[in-house]
Amino acid sequence: MDKIFDSSWMLRLTALFLAVALFLYIQTEEKRETDSSTSNETDVITNVPLEVYYDSDNLFVTGLPETVDVKISGPKQIVMKTKLEKDFKLFVDLNSLLIGEHSVTIHQENFSEKLDVSIEPRIINVTIEEKVTEQFRVEPEMNNRLLAENFVLNEMTAEPSKVAVTGAKSVIDNISYVKATVSGEKDVNKSFEQEAAVKVLDRDLNKLDVSINPDKVNVKVEINEYSKEVPIKINEIGEPVEGLTIESLSPEKSNITVYGSKSVVDSLKEVAVDVDVSKIKKSGPYEFKIELPTGATKLSHEKLTVRATVSGEPVREQGKDSEADTDTDSNSKDTDGN
Image 1: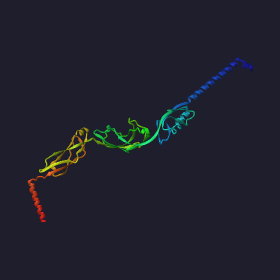
Image 2 (image 1 turned 180 degrees about the vertical axis):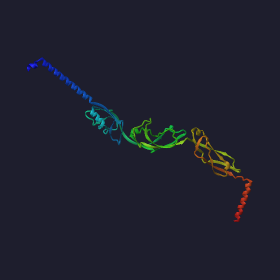
Image 3 (image 1 turned 60 degrees about the horizontal axis):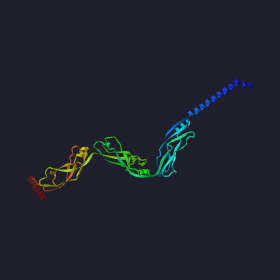
Image 4 (image 1 turned 30 degrees about the vertical axis):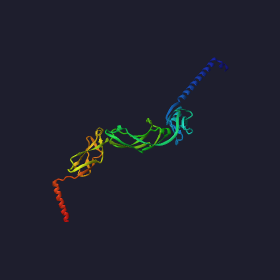
């Protein structure tokens, strides 16, 4: 037996066996490491909600993102399970912090210890301020280019007319506008109502981070045809009844509203009303028709009441005087007969 092991061939075979065994061991380890490496996976979970703990009744926090992204690396099965179930939590706890500016770290819970977790961003800058609520009047608005030609925006009202705006004191102090904008198709030519979202803006028209109650209002939009008030001018026509003198003619209204295209209406300096003085028999009110100016579409009223002041007595014609005397004698006789 000793001679066998002392043989050079046996030593060579033994060495070859050990070399092959070592080679196979190394290959197996490399394959195991490769398999282990390929079983790991990296993935990004986007838009993960960020939970925040603070006294929300009395404080207001700005600078907090609503969501963050999480990068996870580890065994493939655990990565897939984490991404699918999303039973983890990301949060910041501000309860121990005072009013002011702070840099805070986002914390994590319920991730597997076998995962490498990276949060983007991990550190955020926040500002903690006193929460205040104030009432603001809503200013409704609409783009005038939506109006049909020759129509104008007469009035806009919001219901409710005021809203409660809540936010950080510095933000509330910076409010310049509270608007509710109505929209629609072009060529609007009649009044309408529309629900509109309320926007809170600073002086540079930047939207501010506040809460609004209610955040929508009902806007009533009154649209009218283009119009303008024009002075009324009395134009006397005809001849006064003989024996009467027209002392004065006083119109009940001194102005009238004329509707129509802007070019036509703006060219009017006055509206003349023809007053036929031959129809005036005594002092008192008289109605006269107002003629529609050329190119206008309508007037605020179609007739004008004119109060006349008259002096004198009308001169009667001879034939009519005789008939009147006869009628008077007849009436007197009838009265005496009775």
